Image (tube, rainbow, N blue to C red; front, top):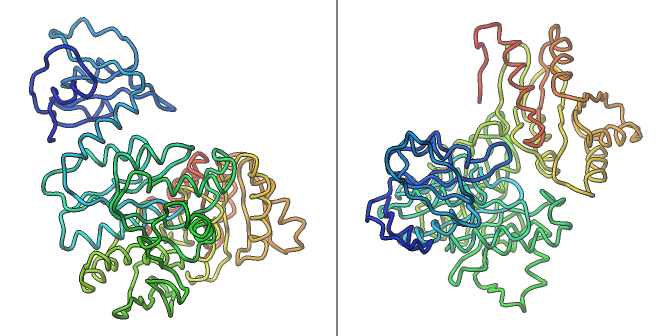
Length: 475
């Protein structure tokens, strides 16, 4: 890592003279600490990093950043370096901003309500064909995740592909100040986290705050997303550099377009159209939403003059992250594990996957609450019930407090859709284990917000029905 203890001391106005010792890494998990790391103690939802400061020192930490006083383990022989700050997360971001300034790598930042991780993985697969890149690991895209991505920069890095997520007002500007991105994707804007933002207008404004600290940038936006286009039309007079915008979608006005989409058994194909050429693109997963994600990634790649052969090879081999529409073929049925997270838009997209998986049984949708919708939650869940009632599913199974409104909507819709509500995941597991034991050919889509832990349902179904042989395939 291209950072010294003395530089960190200067950032936090440490009064004593510090050695010019090179730091190995910056970490927020005491279990990962190695010799000459700096440990930043952060208070999270489940754990307080301050409780593990002594453990970090024992594991070899050179210094710690802490928000409060603590007692060092008496068994520690040498005095350790301690930086006391008002806010550990802001301190982490301050270091990241300084560290980022040391490098010349171009930054591609991806934000939006859904699909960020998929676009990031697509871009990384394309750009790694020819460039030295780093990317956001897993979905570490927030107030601590973005800094941790920055700390992976080296002098060899040509592109940093960074997923940027926010869940509260004011978060985007903090991350934008660190990244100062050169290329920006706003993939879409929906109602995710609307409970924290109050209304959709505030969500849109927050997403566009990613431009706040970038003087020279090119931004790629979804022309088919109404909220994005309304924002642009309403802000053309507010120093919005419209000449820096590139549009992707299906509309003829787009700079980058898709036509002739084919959703096949195990892949998606479409014609990609630029001002200079047309190309057949093949994606290794099924779904219209993958086309939009691909258009975002392809647009950036073309603008940066990546050769079409590298583009096609990279995007045809990208790997999506786990629990995002994983198709798991069990002996007698198919599980579609989309349990990582949920939103109204991603539910609508996920339900379409049933059309493209052939089987002889019924389509079963296991739905957990969508969280962080605030006062909009009841209405959003109710409206989803209207959509689900006339979709291509046969049996709706719900869990949580908010999905009760989804069931109520289905009930009064006049649809013949069967539905059943449960209070917790274990009740669903018990029901499905009994329900599925004498059936064949069913498809079971499992989806819910991360806090609903619907992945527990997938895990137990796999354990129960794999014949103790791991006799299933995962696509």
